[in-house]
Image 1 (cartoon, helix red, strand yellow):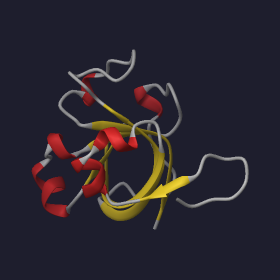
Image 2 (cartoon, one colour; image 1 turned 90 degrees about the vertical axis):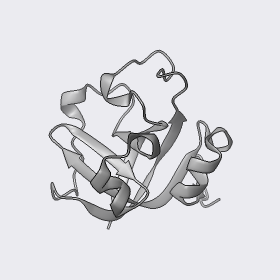
Image 3 (cartoon, one colour; image 1 turned 45 degrees about the vertical axis):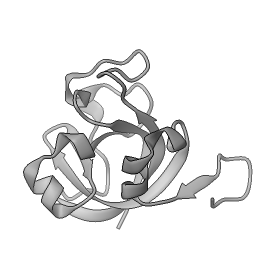
Length: 122
């Protein structure tokens, strides 16, 4: 865990750890290195360049920059529009049976989780 002050602590981890035990990270602010690709209005996170190339939905997440963001507002500053390896920090929520809380978004279907309140660093 990292952080001082009133903000929630950040759990420094790997995307592989989150994939292996998503229930351990539910609702936590996490930070990890990952491949990120922005396609139209959707920002996706993958554990490897190979998984990204295959568009492996089972091991990928959708990024939501802020809570309850409309799909057309998902673009994040700092992304060049092409795939890159970056540090991703945000609140993790897993998807069970295709549903994450009350939000149902077609782009989430088949993915193991979503990230909200995300920041991206090179």
